[in-house]
Image (tube, rainbow, N blue to C red):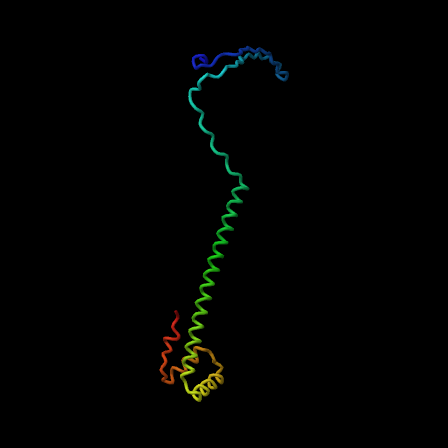
Length: 151
């Protein structure tokens, strides 16, 4: 059978041994054949490639932790960019409101402005928005909606 598949017999031995079971007092004769064959000159089929080794648990945990750290870093960076954009927009709105207030104040009569400012001080509401609202009620050439509009 082995020669039919191209394997040559190198060694053949028949082993005989008698084994005694002392507890039961039984003698058992054992015989077996041990042989050694040379491989065929040309193998019949190529062996399949072994599967890749499984990733160790510590490496999996490390990979997951590094991915989570990278995701947190990206989220923090995105939040920083969004915060910077918000701050820039707020600064632009504040600059626009200040410029509009300065334009309105320069076009207003000093007595009217002083009276209105004193009134706001008594009420405790001195803010640029409140100042613009009060100035708009004086029927000046001024549109508070244009000034208060967000960019």
